[in-house]
Image 1: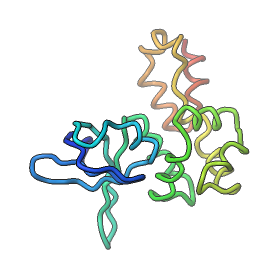
Image 2: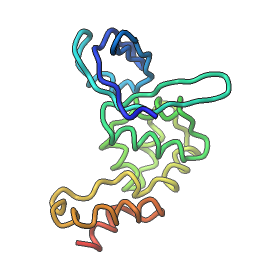
Image 3: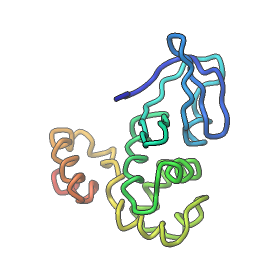
Image 4: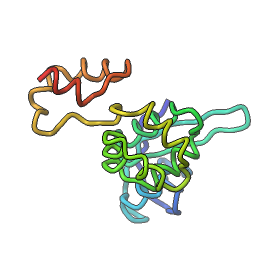
Length: 168
């Protein structure tokens, strides 16, 4: 529906961003870490979005880049994590820390994230291990011809890092 919205930031709260575009002010739910990294009020910003539609309302979620939105969508696949929980989790851990914790199966680090208990952290490890990992930077050129294949394999549940290594 919406891929991204670009406009002037009219207000910021911990997990809310107000963005004005063409006479409309959008109320966007955003992870606190993403919100802190966006420009100040009065400046222009672009946020990547996801719309959550239920029978009793709609909410617009925003992220500072496409990688963060993809991580959010992966978190929604974990049993017991909804949009509010995913936003809270992403507000308490950086993208790099999350990827590192999942790759190294660091359950203790995941349990320290606000709003994430032991059982949900274990479910995250089982569901997401290898899915948020970016291909190693050194082999980015070698894996470029196989990027689509790596993404397809990851969508089927295979580990992105192992796929990148095997194909390079």
